[in-house]
Length: 472
Image (cartoon, rainbow, N blue to C red; front, top):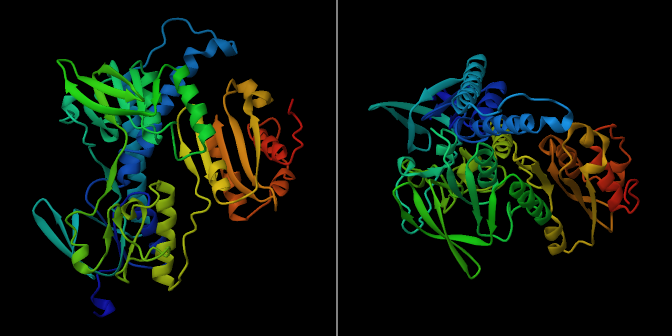
């Protein structure tokens, strides 16, 4: 097919954080770009995930701060409470503002935006359907960025949807009311964040996690610490537990939870399913045009993000790899450079930051202590709690710690793990260090500002080398 017969050089399917970033970078590189999106610009992250949930967390955190302001000498007269309707309106305004920002960037970069569901006719042709009308788009290259969507886990007896009190994370960020009692299934990022939100709004929350600790993909000390923090604010944390079955009641659900040999029945108004997502691949004729699929999504041939069809690349959640917005964005940038500049650049996953936005926040990058030992490293650990530093005391945010994992042989930093105030902003020191294969000594010789929360990072680095200044 001659180049002049193509409607676009690159068509990106999906306008989430992977897709819209890929599209803009492709346009910056001089390509004619079209983005096909079946619903809202911004995808899951902006509309139902990262952004709305963080807006809700921000409101609840502010409520908590005001309620406890007397500890900092601030007097509050009268009752302090949340206007839930106003909170949700603020959340929606943030979402719509961000969505409008993406549209403005598309206009600035002369990106064509087509609404509708995309289905491949062949490896160079899409059919996009909306409200019964179909448009054909021919393109030289494609980037698949359709993302993922929530799924309902099959729990015996648990049936129905939002109107029956069975919620997913999508329902939680558009909640019409604050339930009195809620069981949240899953102690990963989604489960712990919504546990914090609804507990802070006054819901009696029970959090059920099958693994022995919360956020099981993180260093085990972070999960243990977060469990203590959530318990302190009223969440009933049940780790090593499973939701065996549910029974519909007049007002909600009777849930049977098993912890070891102990079985208990918990009555709630809402069951929130905080686990389970599937790649959005159905109905697109992907296998018919030669793409390979696995149980988690589209298979890429290698870390250049190319699929088994050479002019089609896949990024983000749809690949079933690391389901994080910032990973999707990075993969999108790498993919379009490879497409348009003929490169074979590969995505490196060794320094991906992972963040959870509870209060306190959790952030991690690199190998956990357990992973480093499994890989055969002679491991040294350094730790420092925030509570000993002036900035933490002054701000009233003394919870948590920093932990670093070091290779004793060469002194190289292997991982950095944090729980505390603003740690999702602080973790990038570890990201850069891992990218540069830096030693712990070189980081410790970098001057850290005083008074700052980052002093705990310096102290943990010093501790790993055996000479922490403030260690008692």
